[in-house]
Image (cartoon, rainbow, N blue to C red):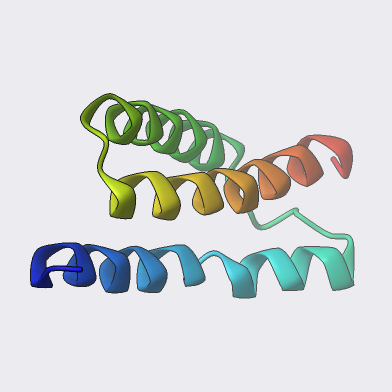
Length: 84
């Protein structure tokens, strides 16, 4: 693995991990009142687009990071809609 892909995987890991505290908090509290629905709609669509770009360019860091982020951001979005 070259340095560029390693850097991409590290960056993807850090940005993806940033969603985990919010996801854990929502799961534990069952409350999403302080979370913006619009923010998570935009993030989820944007991450999906990044994932498609990664698939089109065969970029492993972009694919992995955005696939995982799509799952976490979508989970928060679903709970935001469900717990309102």
